[in-house]
Image 1 (cartoon, chains in turn purple, red):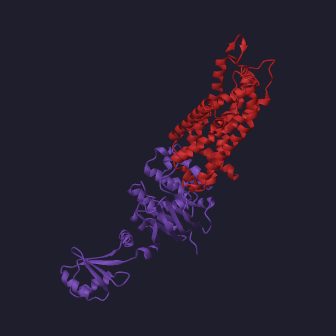
Image 2 (image 1 turned 90 degrees about the vertical axis):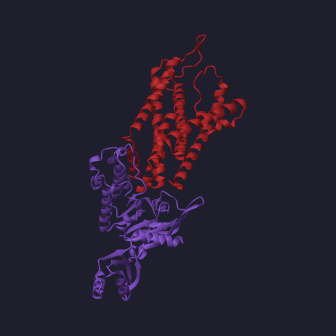
Image 3 (image 1 turned 180 degrees about the vertical axis):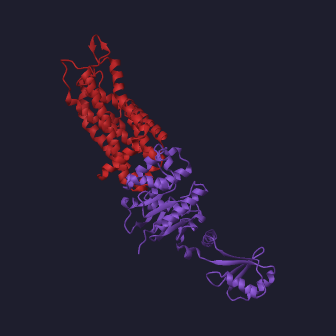
Length: 300
Length: 270
């Protein structure tokens, strides 16, 4: 089955520089698809191509299983790079233009402008808005007409910590409603909290893509310590499920031969073998460490 | 609402609360009759008289007024060009040309509606020119003069073509340069450089091809209206003979500009 967005061998060159190299992937319906990559990896270029503001040098893509067209773009709420509005018009008037282009009712403006907490400033000119307010207005414009697909490129740019948390919550809520969300970001924490699928771009190449667990893994380990670290190591080495033990400053990182760690079992085992633990914590690999591991492996 | 009307309505939403648009439109509307009135007042519709002879003719009376007003308005075509450059480069400055496409316009729709706006503005300014002609015709009417001189109305078409020619050059520069100040500067520089080339080429080196340069050829559509009594009738005959060619080449330039503008906007990265 083809996805909401399906890319086949998309390439983009700027003279000698190849910004994208044969990128292919599908975005499944209802997924929150994170496009990850460092600055300059091609994320925005990729979104620019699928929104028809950049021309691909090769390959093709489809939206909703059809050739891309203006009618399909009207069904998508998109925030690409910076918020782009007429500076001399108010937030309200700018959204009226967006609503007219998208063929959405102007009556929906009040709902979306309240969602992003700009209702009180709706009649102020866009040029008087702070960076965070501009970003929020752009998100409001994406939400006009309640589209089933949303494309966000660095959606938390310019927002303060509470604004970032609000947008993250908004994305989570939209995902719960079954919307398909494509989100490009270099802020891995941002993506880690909301994405179901990821694609990792590096120097224009898609090096991994799929659901979050399959791409980034769900490796867990247990960190533990005891007053007698030598005895702890000895008994852990005797336990069949222990794959490896990595000593750190004053703890052991214990990796097990099973997908999920079982701290209760370990605690009981140690206690029964005369070791009382004074520290026990299950740790999971962060998206950041997985990302660095993947990108370094590919570079090497 | 039919699709194209909705597109036009969106363009209206962009400008209806834009003060600069209204200021420039008022300036254009006022300057065309005002500039004509200054010349009318200065020449006293016949000044100077030599030995009692009215050597300038009566440029602001029928039928000459149909030539005089568009000729003088032709000097002011840079004013609508400034408005066009402002409106067009705003889209680049605010990157709203990209946003309009992202939100659901095709590239063709964006560029066609912009070109249609230029067409409407040209029509509007031509309307101002016609009203100015009627005003001066009424002001200078005498019992012995022809009532209107409708046969000279073709100059309205020539003015329309001349302004469209300049306006599309303004669009082209806006699209290529993307910055308002720079685009205006290059536009004026081009006007001056072309006039310099035309003067030098025609007067010093007797080159005739300079008459067919993009702005010069459309300038030549409207024959200069002053001192017609002392100009040889031969000049008028030559102009009559060449005017279909000037018109054809001007229209050709317009078509080329439209094709280049359309091609560039549709094919390049925004």
